[in-house]
Amino acid sequence: MELKAIRSSESQPEITTLGEMILSHESVTNYPGPEFSDPGDTVYDDGYLRVEYERFYVSCGGRPLYHLSRREFLILSRLVRAAGRPVTKEEIWACVWGDAATFNAGNFRVHIANLRRKLAPYELDIVAMVNVGYHLERVVAQEDRNEQAR
Image (cartoon, rainbow, N blue to C red):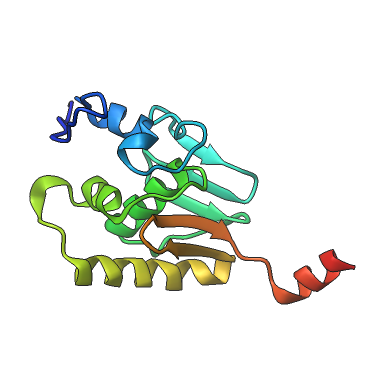
């Protein structure tokens, strides 16, 4: 199934498929850096966080997160695919809700807040960057920061 994107402008090339939209970070943010991870990848694993896209499975530090809703999983997987770079709320909305619903800021905030609460015990946080977007990062405990400073 190939999804068509509707965004096009003179300054950016026309994006015709969802895969091209995911791969083109310019269509999401002006943040410089390498492209997003390949949407064809079926598993993301950095040694701590593991996301299996086809199975809707997430684990952190070897502990599975079974209590994520489908939408929370899609938000998390979109942030993971961005590899630490910010993702706009519009891009997250398009990935999770698609064209089925118009953007609803309250609904979006509730899903982000619920996901943050569920990720907190695993030392993960969704960080909001004002007027830029969101990115996923691992939280370092204050004790660990003190040890690193020594």
